[in-house]
Length: 424
Image (cartoon, rainbow, N blue to C red):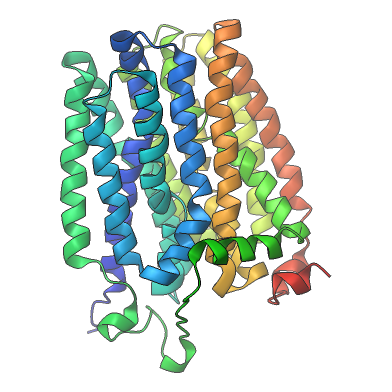
């Protein structure tokens, strides 16, 4: 009988850590209307705070990846979860718009950065040699699985009690998760005398200790890869990915549905349904990314997402719950399915050693897109008193992204040289 490998324990710790961070991040959609009602703030102001959060957690990605190399993953996870806890506690005492921007824009944005950007590829690359695609698919799926578990419940608590009770539930879950990280998280297989799952020979493992300043490491990598065409194709397509997911659906979907007469609980339930099918779609995408040309996976993911977003305004205008359910299933399958192929392409082109930081910069562009959508959709709503143009435009951009990824050449994936050599 084979011994149970500790890599799976690490996988599940990371999985639930990402779920908690995802709950905190995605709960912004539930709190827009309560904050607007209680504090009298404009929706564009609240959207701006959440846009800052999306932007900061994305931009922090490459620096988080570099910090992991210097301090270790366990310390970084403890620091990040503690930061999120601090932001949640401060939320109970805020009374001014600038405090919302500081707490939900800066503190929670930075606190969620590690969990929602580079943690998934780091765990998959460090702890798994075999089943890496499956592990990565499960971890990326967990970002939206938080919606599956709690968003409808949070919406019910807000409606029956207040947003403070909902925030209290998030606080308790975060405290429990911090305890689990403190007790069971490890930095690497070597720390407990193991090899990564599926690796047979110790000589195959290379662990480098970086003594440089993590900021210098992150920017040195960026200066190398900006000269490479493949980096820009991935970065621009991922900008559109962020614009069409967390920035738009994650922030404004509930408010958009409420504007057409659906209840907040019903809208949150649709996000929950998306979470169910995202778990299926992203896990399947991880499995497929080890077997099928990743360019074509991304082509279909972006194309189908674009079609679904153009369809959404029609579904809502019809007032049909059946059409909304169809959209939620279709969109959910595709929500984060783009991550495993993008991570896989990054690793194949730029090599395993640099792929964490390179993906961090690619994900930063994802969050630039998310921030643009979160703030931009709020502005569009103020102008037209509707989100329809925001969702239609996002769908059109997705169709454009499907063309960007297909410009990647098959031979690019066979190159494992340094980025500076790739640029030549």
